Structures are given as structure tokens and as C-alpha cells.
Length: 155
Image (cartoon, rainbow, N blue to C red; front, side):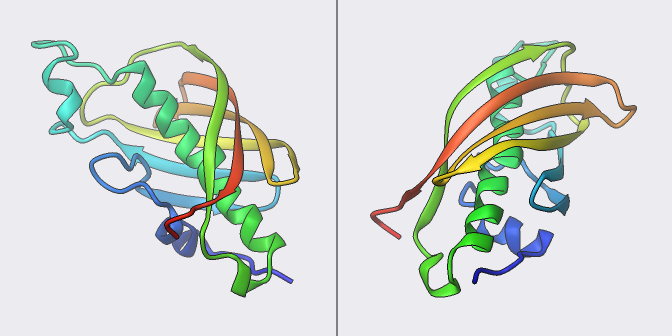
């Protein structure tokens, strides 16, 4: 019925763009899991005020990064598998809620891996457990987050 998107095709469908796209690469994706990567560039605008002289990535940006991979990208992938190709245009996966724990800070220039595991997918609503680690494998943050697929009235 639908199609299986490649990691590159999935990234091409992600609606967020710079400066608010926090996904550089989708490493792998299937019906149950997703793995993405992002490097926080030292020139990101939010570092200017958080905190001057000792910048760290705001927690809300870490959560956004986890949700862009584990909820939005996963939702795009699942909608593409479910719907016929001619019905896929105009769908957005919107983040709806999350419970998050932060374990360490992320500095400018630091790279992270984001891995999501599907908890459930039904009626275009998904829930996923998402973990962010640094490149040494140390856990930065964990969340259980939800999103829902909606028609984009503009799309």
C-alpha cells in the first residue's frame, strides 16, 4: 500500500529547517526503531544567551531534538508505510506531550545520537521512548514522547 522510505528520503520530508532543524542524519529506521544524529553547531543562536561565557544547550532544545527524530521522523516513516503514495502529501506529525529526564549538559560543537523505540502506533498517534547519548555513549537525556499525524491545511 504505502512505501518504505530510505533514511535520506525521510530526512528530506522532515518539515523543520535551519535554524530549527536538529537532525543531521537518519542512520537507520524501521517499523519499531529509529536512529538519528545531530551536532550542535557553536554558532547556534540560542548559545548567545544560555549562558554567556559558558554556553550549554537548553533542555527544551534537547527535547526538541529527541522529538524531531523519535516522534516526527518516526511518524513520517509510519504514515508513508500506511498510506498509498498519492495520499501521503500534506501529513504532519506534531509533537503532543513528553516526560523527560536530563542527565548531563551538551556543549556547543558536541555531537549526539538519538535512538527511538516505538511504544505504540494507532490511528496516526504514536508514542516512543527516545534516548539521547553523546558520542562516547553517555546518556544525556531520556523521554517518552507522543505525537499525532494531522493534515496540514497549507500542504
